[in-house]
Amino acid sequence: MPSPTRLQTKRLPLLGLLLASFFSLLLAACGNADTGSAPAPTASTPAAKPNVTAPTSLIKAGTLTVGSDTTYTPMEFLDTKTNKYTGFDVQLIQAMGQRMGLNVVIQKTSFDTIFDDLNNKRFDVVISSVTINDKRKAAFDFVPYFNAGESLLVPKGNPKKLKSVTDLCGLNIGVQTGTVEKDDLDAATKDCKKAGKPDIKQTVLQSQTDVVQLLANGRVEATYQDSPVTDYYNKINPGQFEVGGSVVNAAPYGITVRKGDTSMLTAVQKAFEAVKSDGTYNNLFKSWGFSDQQKAAYIKRQESLA
Image (cartoon, rainbow, N blue to C red; front, side, top):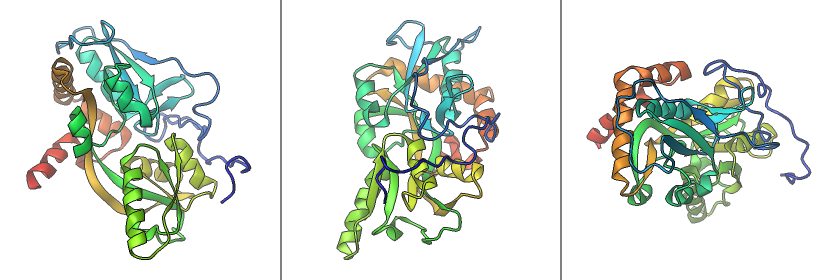
């Protein structure tokens, strides 16, 4: 594949258009969302009548400071028209902060440092499409809020006929650093070796939008990411991409809290229950076009069947 420094960039056809909802929120141009002047942290104002007691362990009184890797459309990303962060995760945590009577400030961070930043108290919580797994549960507490999986994004027509990671031996695959998909590609590479097949080549970048740009530019054969992201890019670029195979490794996303921060965990849990009870949670699912099987209630049904 050509060197990234020598490649002439080709933009995704729909990037730069303003999308008013799931299909009408602005998708920042791939590769450009992080350039130029950095946006100010996105803040929201508290509700007039909060109904959840705020945590006592806030970094800044009256403010819930939230860490997020804001390159993960449609969950968290930059709306370049307003220069503010938006997405399902962002709108959810803003609504939850309002129930606690708190200003919500979104602090951009890279996913590969997001957990260290949380432990170092750069922010109070993380909401950033964080997949809950045993390793992470040992280090952090979580409030599950979304059911997702992993899937492949491939060029239209799926020329390599890719259906799963077992088809990726010898191919160049784009993936974001620090993700469960990166771990899974590493494991799949070992399986390729055991089978006497070539390794999976990985092009690993910090920004998910830049990862998808690799596919748009023909520099990778596929990208591997969480299923809501795959579905989003497929839907807004139907003539350019498609989903390769089916969703695998279904697991919940969780709002991430420092281990032992009981005050924060309790407040976040109660705020989440509040936005579910008052219909905000369901309305967010409708406005972003997600299915009922991605709701927290479905996570609980899965766990009961395990």
